[in-house]
Length: 127
Image (cartoon, rainbow, N blue to C red; front, side):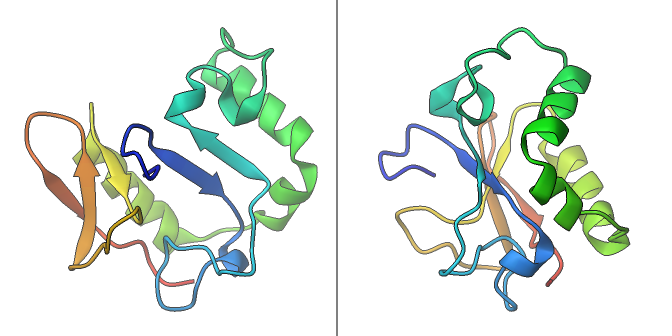
């Protein structure tokens, strides 16, 4: 979460960029090149030419604009893919998981914001 609590943020990075003890926290020495904040609204990753593209078209743009990141993420990671599917199911249709913010995130899972009730999802698998 942004320090103000008004925007949710995410970074996309290869598994090697995450801390060995938490599957959702980037290492301190890493700064992902692919960031998005809900404060950017439809300017995904800061791009001003994608507001009305479909998800498939956005994926094509991502592949084209982040080739090194895409290359570093190639391969199978069934543990993470399974966690991700479960997270999507639990958070549908209006929650977002929060791994860190201007407060200590503790417990046995990620707090999810949005929706009428607070929910948690398990932590992603360790890298």
